[in-house]
Length: 330
Ligand code: C5P
Image 1 (cartoon, rainbow, N blue to C red):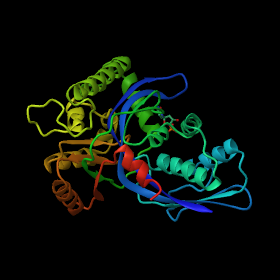
Image 2 (image 1 turned 90 degrees about the vertical axis):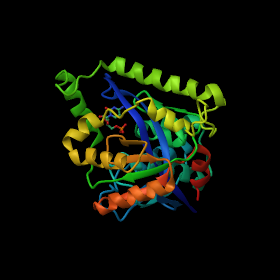
Image 3 (image 1 turned 60 degrees about the vertical axis):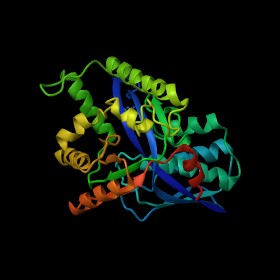
């Protein structure tokens, strides 16, 4: 038996890097948001044993370094199931792009496998297995807007937000996340430079927490629930809670290391802003840069302008939690 699973991408709405922890990970805070761009996976279990990854894209590993491989192994063990798992990946999301493609593929494998072997794992068990495989996996077990804490693997669903138009630009640059964290540490150790004087890690984390908390309480003070589509602060402003969130000034700390290294990515952000994005940012450690737009036509126009510059640009929308779960199995 086999099932087809849509494996959606995420963007980060702000990402704050905190202290380097004794376990080698960094404390972080971020708001993840799932978007409608996706890879498609087919998960099958046949007679035999082991795990086989099939993907025509040569950048995707087929061995145990593949997140799908690692999660399939753990899921089969946890469910005490037998058979050979085949994971076929139709890749559309960028590899090492900051959209969580590999992490999302792994969660899609887990969900697909549970269906095929008809042995659903408990919610906490799924989250444990996902977190073991990588910090960016558990968010895909929640979907919609998600608060990420710890090393990013502690996830809390945030009140849903209405779909927002979004342009995703994926330059052909693969950014290594561990390497970018290491470069961040170097900047911190050297005490910053003239352009970059960072507040302490714990101060940054506290500021991010206060910002998100006050957005949540501010946005809910009038409407009851952020994401209800009603303007957050009234007085006729046709603004969504998402706009309120990005207006708090949340930023992605990775821009401070990635943009100086790849100035063309800063340029993409500027083009998105010039094209009318109400917010533009690097996603994760990049190299994907996205912009949020007030209308579908503005998003389409911006995507066209970027494609004229020979960049791969897609107009899409953010994916609220309910739609995320509805669309996972097609
Ligand atoms: O969890 P994941 O496998 O995605 O992490 C890959 C690497 O990225 C880690 O080994 C670590 O070097 C770095 N990382 C980090 N802090 C985090 C998440 C990842 O330093 N919060």
